[in-house]
Length: 178
Picture 1 (spheres, helix red, strand yellow):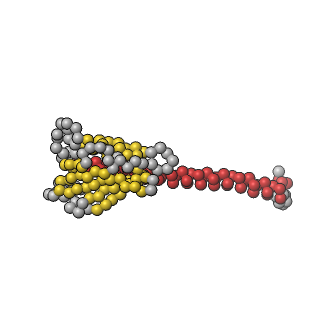
Picture 2: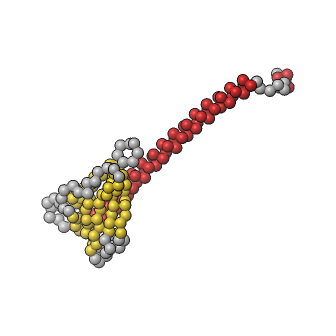
Picture 3: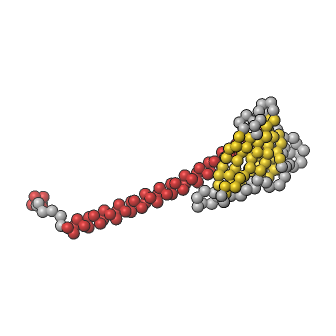
């Protein structure tokens, strides 16, 4: 054993070549796994962002619908609705304000936009969600002896996974029962 430790001979060329080849295979495998994981993480991040923007859009739409006193049109499945707001956080405290929610084509998908009139506290246009699959997502419902409401049903697609679907029926708390 002591003799082997004192031996000053180096490595044979074949041993060195085999070591480099094995290290190359190991490093190549690790690199391909890291590249694959990075691509997967990027796809998941896009999917999460699309889902989160859809949830935020539905939340903001819910606030507007709860504050609205009227919706136009009153029936059918449509791609745009106009709400009449009075005394709401997104409207004005004393005057009436109108807000339009609509889907707008963006390539092969659709965006969900909110356009507030100049009389609103925060006028202007804002895109709330991207990647909607269908343009007609609103179904105003005006049933006997109930508050007017709007059924909202939309799916958001991002990446290769199945679309993320959000659906809800939201009633106008300031609406008039018929």
